[in-house]
Each structure stands twice: as C-alpha cells, then as structure tokens.
Length: 320
Image (tube, rainbow, N blue to C red; front, side, top):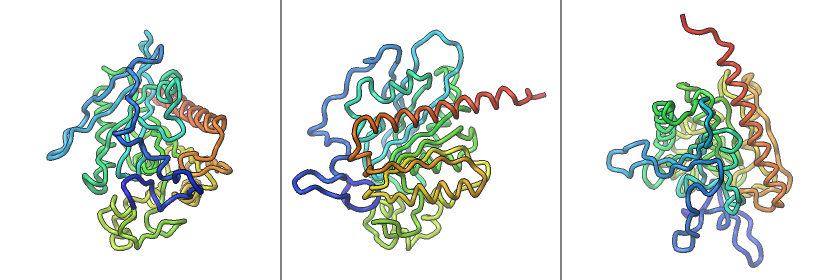
C-alpha cells in the first residue's frame, strides 16, 4: 500500500486514466495549486494555522477555523472536521476529491449556515500509531472548549464530520468522547471494523493502511484492532449518526457503514444510513449535482443535531 492510498486496497482503474486512489489523494506539493487567500468569502472569517497541541519530539499540531462574521453575541455550534488520507497523509482543510474546486469553498458554506468550523491536524501513521490520532482529536476538542468564549463557539453542540480515514476517527470520537459528548456525527465512506475481512481489506496483511495505523497487522494485534474499531465501541446513548457510503466503493466496502448503522440501532441510538448508487470512494463517478446533494443533506443533518442539542440544553434545569 503506498502512502497515497485510502483505507483498503487499490481502487478500480480505467483503461487510460488514473486510479481512484490517485484521484482522491491530495495533490502532491510539487503540483498542488497555491491555496486561496484567506477571507475570500463574504461573511466568513478564516483563522489559519492555530497551534492547539504540542507533542514531545513531534511537530506542533494546528487547526484552521472558519467563523461566521456577524455581530451575534450567541455562541455558535461547532463542526469539527477530520480529513482522510488512509491515516498516512492528507490535509486538514480537504473535504475530499469532489469539493476541492468549489466556490464558495465547503467550509465557508458550513460557516455561512451558522457553524464555527475547525479542521484539525492529527498525527499520521508515519509519526505515531493508534491511539495517537484519536488522542489528538480529543486534545483539539479540549482546546476549542478551553477557548470557546474567545472564539464564540459552543462545543456542547459539536458535530464531528469526517471522510474516509477521517470518518473512522470521527466515529471513534463520537462514540468515546464524553466531555463534551458530540451532538452528532456525519461519516462519509469510512471504515468501522478493523478486525474482519471486508471487501479488499484483510486483517492478516501487515502492509495495509490499517496495519500501519495500528503498528501491526490487525490479526496479530486483536485488542488494538478492536479498540480502533468504531463497531466495537457502539454504546447505548451514542450521538445520532448519518452514515453515507457509495454502493460501488472499491476501497472501503459499504458493509462497514451498514454494520455500524445496524449496531447503533440495536443499541437504541439513532443512525441514518444512506447508500448512494453508483458512487465509488470519494464520490468518484457521481455527477456534480449528486455530490452537492450529499453535502447539502449532510449539512442539514448537522444543523438539526446542533438545534436539537441546543433545545436539550435549554430544557435542562439549572444547577442548584
């Protein structure tokens, strides 16, 4: 498995074009376009490269923020986005292959809907093995809570949103973090089970992205693989999930999302499963209008969860 891949094994390739794996990877630095200037969208304030954690012997971890620019004194709900890249690479501000040329950009669109958005670094598998990336996301949420008054955010109304490997980590954060517990989770085409062969993934292979994440073939480290599997962390009282997966995904089998949705429902936790016909990993193969529909429905779910959590907080009695 090369460092440019996504979870699982190689995707389908055309007769003369690049593979899905090559398409979904963030552009190589030698070829990537320069990033747009901050504050390109009206009504949205961008704050880039904010350090949120120091790691001994490692790079400082940073996050980017998109904040609605208005005069409201009300604290905004938060979307905490987790990027993909097979736990091996990727950029924190990349929502995936099909949104890279959007204007307004996707996180500006989420901010325009009334959210603050944070896109956080986490340690990649070449830097540290699991649970390091999950610990980093916990630290990001801790920092955002610590600075919430300054930023004008309400982390009690956090919706975690992740795609591919980032969706796997977002699922784990939603299922295991309790201070504060996320209000909901939007998960795009993400692995949920590192213990069982699914699609092209085999737990005995020591060269997969999953093995690199764990530091060993999952079959040889069953306890670690289980701890890193959202499916094994399902619990009663988990926040509501929206799981979106293509039925033609060649990298992460759609059974990952189906199994997680079924387990959540069995535990009594709300879970919506949307299987998208004709979609490969990264929404490859879909028309632009269909990708926009997936984004809009995901954003509507995030809004509904933030509103529902806000109403719950208002209904709770004040501390005596």
